[in-house]
Every structure is written in structure tokens, then in C-alpha cells.
Length: 312
Image (cartoon, rainbow, N blue to C red):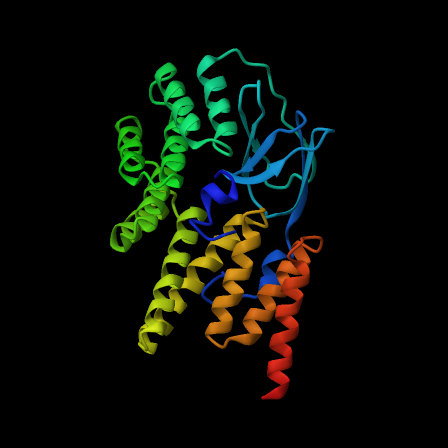
């Protein structure tokens, strides 16, 4: 998974409380471990394709909320070849991921496209296409191209990029999640739900982008039904929104992309009048992100809910 704006928020200006039994957020995080990825300075780090950020000038990135079990660490840095490495299920502390300088023209073109995607979508699309030309079937370049075209509102070309990708990789969870995103942004709800659910199936249940997309889609539908006075469908869609956002948060394991989702899930609970659940979500956010610029706002949400509860 890539950056927040390009991966998960899907147009929002931006862990199952979590299983069927309603386990609390705190209980889900008791067994989390701290791992520090050590690589090149300013290298981007993904865990199981979820972006956790960049290493600092000393080449380190500390992840304090990693769930138990085996994970795949992927590291990319400009001018170096990308490396994926398995993280053992019980490993804590520093984890070295050595990178090697690259002269691969396709990889360098892809890295250029990734940089340009933040500042110039047209030039980024051109660079992604160049990477694909240099390396036919370049999965990440096709996905990047689809995302940047979708961000630019060119949904037809974005879907074409996904179709072209599938000629090489017919089954790919991320491609299906990207397709779902494109359909959602184009207002095609039925196609979006189908693509997101296919992504979850292809990812064998792990696809936080797709769960996020479903959560946001159902939240939007609930708001629409509420505005129309259809309160039964409003309630039903809020239930679906909460269910999918909870799963997405659990799978993100405290990654930066989860910052906005905590607030969205809390908001959904508030609209359901599930105030204790909303408070639990906001408190978990403060535990994981105490230094976030959003922390004072989230604390104010808790204070407002408690004030409302006392007045009832």
C-alpha cells in the first residue's frame, strides 16, 4: 500500500473490536511489539504492503504497534533496488534491510514517477508509462499509473491501466482494490463493492484498502439515507461502515494511514449513538498517536461525548 492520500482515504480530505465477540481495542493491542527497521536514510518502509513511513537521517524507522506473527518488510529508496524481507514472528528490536545501488532503468523511471506523483500527475503518468515500456508487466508501475490517473479524474484510463495489468497478473488483490477505488470515486457503487470484495477474497482476507473503501462507501450511503429520512437504511449502512472500518484499522496495525480512520470510525459510532465504543476508539487513537497534531481534537471529542452523557 502506498501513501495515505493515494491509497486509503479515497477523496476524504484527509483495531475486530475486532472480532465477532466484540473484543476491545485495548485487548487487541496488548501483544503488539516494537520493531526498528534499519536501512538507508529516507527509505520508505512497508509492512505487508502497508506503508509505515520513511527512515530518518540515521536510516531507522521504529514501529511500535506491530502485531504478532510473520510479516513481510519491503523497503524502497531512490537510487537503490527495492528489497523485500521476511520478519520472523517473534522478532523485536532492530531489523536490518540492506539495499544495493541500482542502474535498472525501469526501476529508476518508476522511482521518478513516484516522486512526480506528489507534484505533477501528468508527468508522473508519463514516467509510469516509461517504466512499463522498459519493463513490460511492471506490476507496481501499472498500479501507480492507475492511481495517478484516478487522482486526476481520468477514470476510463485508470481502469484501462488495471485491465492492462491483469493481462500479466490476472489475480491481484491490490489491483482489485484500486479498481474498487476508481469505481467508488466515479460514483459506481455496485461495481465498487464487487471490486472491493474481490480484492478481499484475492488477498485471503487481508486487504485494508478494500475494507477502508467499503467502510467509506457504506458511511456515505448511510449519510444519504439519513438526509432522505430513511432511518432504517441509514442504521443498516452505518453497521456495515463500522464493521469494515474496524477490520481495516486492525489490519493497518497502527500505520500512519490509520490516523484518519480512527476518527471516521469514532464518528460512525457517535452517529449510531454508541458513545462508549466511540470513546474507546478515540482513547486508542491517543494511546497510539499521543504526539499527533490531531490529538487535541480527538481529546475534545471524548470530552464532548462525556459531557453529553452526563447531561442525559
